[in-house]
Length: 134
Image (cartoon, rainbow, N blue to C red; front, side, top):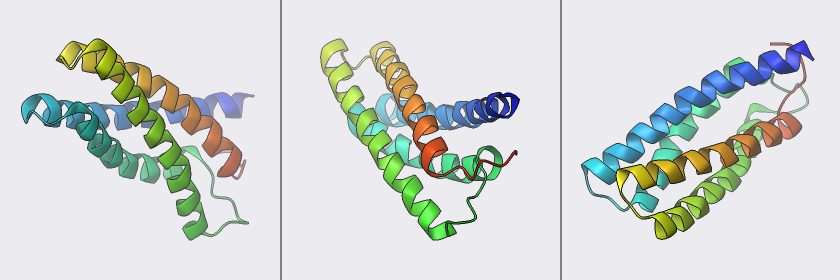
């Protein structure tokens, strides 16, 4: 149980950093450059995804010996695409319902982040983690 708690904590640290990257790019594009918040959220999600993959597979999850790095990366991408579509759907629904002010985009993004975070941990734990202690 302690190993799982440590893994969740590491996942949290990586997630916070990825979220800061995601949010920073989202706000820069949507509020700084006036880009549509849904498009900006898609771009920011992809930027944070690259960081998240590198950090998650280095510090959070153990490589499965029965899986090539290429397959690992492809599974990570597929799982992330599901997270991407969850993120985009929540951003679309939220900004249509609440508006596109900085506050409402932030509220919507917080909700999207929470839901996608749960999806990311559970799916990666099930399909990518080798189960060894980090």
